[in-house]
Image (spheres, rainbow, N blue to C red):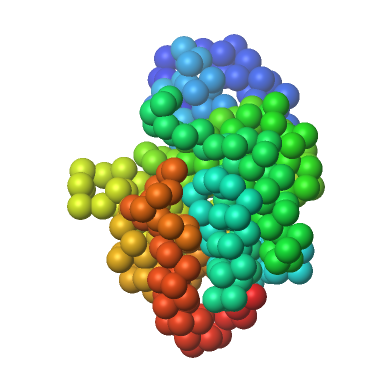
Length: 337
């Protein structure tokens, strides 16, 4: 990090800034130019608040020369992180397909879907128990009962379960959940991220609807800074001016995230498009771009689904989509399952 001081900065101000920065644990190298004084910060500058430095009246500008995330940064962790979910590995050449309904609606529904997606090759079961909805009048999920039904489906199929959390108050209900999902709307719920950093459980972190890649990785950093290194990144589409799809899948985010970070990356083609017929081509694009997995919505009767029926595949459609997915994963040299 480089701090450029104003030309009229007094010696006492410069020394005061240097002492303040050194208390943060970084070394400060002072460079005297003809008209400008520059302070070079060496060490872990991720703990330094740029805005706080910029507010000092003697500071002209502050620039980072290294990304502000350290735990999630590939520069410090060159090898791919492999997240193990009950024996199913994600990342480092391992590929997983997570499938299931948007919302858990009843025992028969979630059990039937679980059995069928497993038969088609899915390895993890997704299902919403707590549902953040745009409208307060829309179905909000079965909550604790939904998690109980997911666990029943797991008992019958052996599939690890993935479900979304919305509040730190709900953490006790998630003690038997295998992967905790943080939805797009909660990507910057920092208090929630801090608490998830204290537990030893994989976290599937979805990118926010209007967040940059750096902001996405900084949210992962919140979790990892607390000690939990088992983070899976999920690109689920971002909001753009385009109206042909529900969101716009940022396929370029996959190789960018893989270059910047060592964390595994999965893609959600269902939320990205909002259209069933786009799930297959977007899944293929994700695999070609280097994704480590997919998360696909499947419902046994999409027309009657209580949420996101328009983007949910039937089990039969999912089986058809899985055939080219299996071939592409094998062609890419990755291990499925």
